[in-house]
Length: 432
Ligand SMILES: Cc1ncc(C[n+]2csc(CCOP(=O)(O)OP(=O)(O)O)c2C)c(N)n1
Ligand SMILES: [Mg+2]
Image 1 (tube, rainbow, N blue to C red):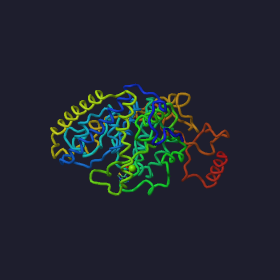
Image 2: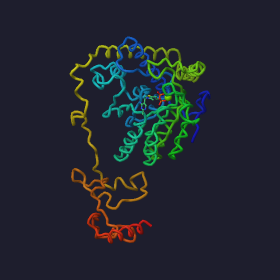
Image 3: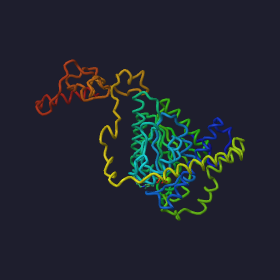
Image 4: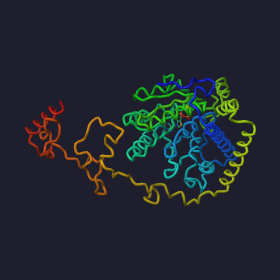
């Protein structure tokens, strides 16, 4: 495990990899945008214009923004409820987020969803959130492995909470990602609470990054309220994953400043705890840093304030003016209806040579006889298709463990008992 900048350490440029002035300011802009979008939605919620639940990433903006900013355009994300910042970095316009929560007709799901269950597979490479905590880990591992299969050199990323890291699928997914050496980065946002359960009451670990040890993968611990530290950790993890180093877990330590959602006043949170974290607001901390480093002055800040104000007023107006969907619309688009819904096709047809060493970045630990000799649905050679591989009778196995020339399919039902016993003995021998 590697420890990046300690919690509470003051930010200095020296301890971090240098960023360009534009990168420093982008991180600031996106955190401000993240907060402004959520502030606007709180207003809409209080006016009863938000249809579903409203969650908040107040105080956690540095995590969504700093991690997603480390990705390239072609990379894939799957955000959860507190990752609106990641959507914004990926280029989702605020109006889509507003309309989605207001269930408006022009929203990405055409008013069928009242929160953030939407993605963009075509352009921005966003997989929709899955409410069952942890399920996105195997899904994004699949996307990562799929991208490698297609030679795309992509990295995938998703986020999980301290509570979500105790689900079974978190462990199954991370184990799967580790064994597959998937180019996948998992961000564990430890905000100390899962609903009203403090992290200490649900997991006996000081550092949730330790979960990575069980799967033999590397992990980082980072101050989740320090956007540059988060970005640097994510950038390093993304580079390593892209280079074939396998998945990496980043634990970002932070605090959930509001309740689980708007309905929850979070009175169970000790006052001193809240006060401690409020004093470590990621945007206020970063503003101080930018000012001290002369990257932002009063005029620059005013410019960003005005830009955000104008943008959000226009986006909110658009969203409010969008109609509600017609009632009869509710019954459509519930299930995939084929090409008009989901015109994406699996791309199986690649020659085995492209997928096996030395071209493949994964070393095989064993080989399958007949691998690559099967037929794909289109009739061409299918490199991963075991159905057409000749089944080798144990007796036909040559002493080197490879199939002999006259392989025949064994028929368990009709084979005489004696022959079956001999075959079983031979296969035990072959295994030895
Ligand atoms: C598998 C599963 N179990 C329970 C829930 C209900 N649920 C939704 S959010 C939540 C708390 C999550 O806490 P945490 O993972 O720490 O994320 P945070 O809300 O703090 O960001 C729970 C229990 C769920 N969505 N999925
Ligand atoms: Mg939590």
